[in-house]
Image (cartoon, rainbow, N blue to C red; front, side):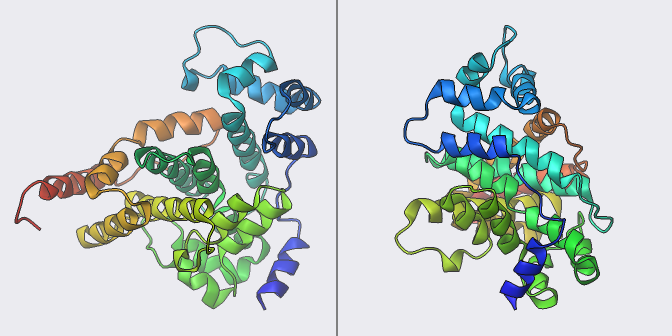
Length: 313
């Protein structure tokens, strides 16, 4: 049944495509020693992509002190990995925003996506691991399947899309398999595979909600999947808080998956709000306001205090 649904989705007009120049650039970035001049040539061949890279490089987000006027300068400033992430992020925004999806709150979708991406990258940094950019990409792309399913099978997905709304609960992931027969993670992985992204990214997205079925012997892939899973749990905590008990539960889940101590994890959660606004501006997207930020922050700070007070629960 799952394969039938995948095939049906693939045949619809709702699966976003990545421009050929972007796919070529991303593929070249994956090589052992990519030729810098060749990368510049690929970017130069697509006027839209070239102008976007220059715009991103000159953004206050990166603190440049002089104007970047050439693609070579931009690539030098940003680095190949960060440039790849930005290219993918910007094209994702363009493609997703073209889809008609009245049952889904797009500003909430984008807040979830950039929150998950930012947290996955921060968790990687806090753990001293070298998978930061891959974790960021996976976090940013992990929920593409939500928009595609809501667009391709709106009648079957409508009630699930409403569970995805801010403050509406955490049960939408389990409901996908029951009502649609497939998860958004599987659909997201299908799209990333069609975009010719590395297998590590594709598979990490596929199993980021299902860390019990990781790939034996593939330590890097498994670590990225766990980081993105932890970031997804933490994102739910920040955006869909139900109660102090649920916050404690999600903190525990995120801590276990990320391998971070609770105080490190909570400190990371408390420090990202301004960064999200900057990232949203960089990618030119509108995000859902943090409706419960102050209440969530108070509860997280209370938990942080409890960690350092022996005998307090």
